[in-house]
Picture 1: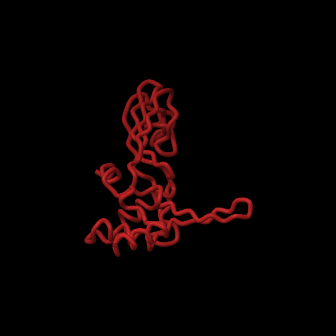
Picture 2: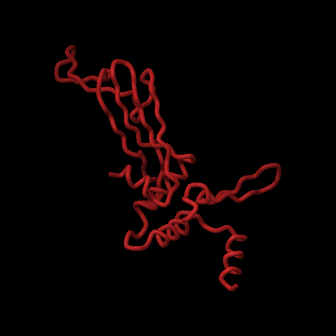
Picture 3: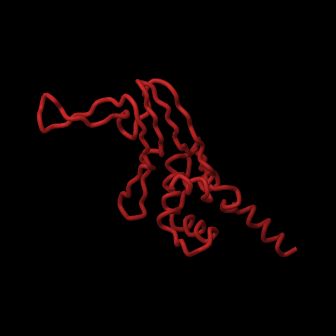
Length: 170
């Protein structure tokens, strides 16, 4: 059910990325594999490559320093393996670190009794995604929420706020 939440949230819809070919997509850290009893070491198990089967890995994440300090690790992936070939469908976001970490904050750490707008505002205030880029001695401030949120939910830049205030007066 979590995958449905990705598409129904105020975030830009992630893309489904398809792969078909020789086994190449990990689920998440290793290629698809299974555990079997080791005939050479009774009571032990070993991993062998999967010949046929399905795997699904949910969004991989952890918290670092606090309960809301989210860290993205891997995108959700569905994998179907059959005789050394793999069909993998990955739920991919354009800026994965900013996208998934913000989505996790929105999903897990905002007040679900509030409206979507209030939750988005809470996320923007408590989990800022604004960075400064230095290029040739010139600093540019980048607000990642302007690219990872759907247009309806994006924060307004200063010019848009001024224009909206003027429109409300007129």
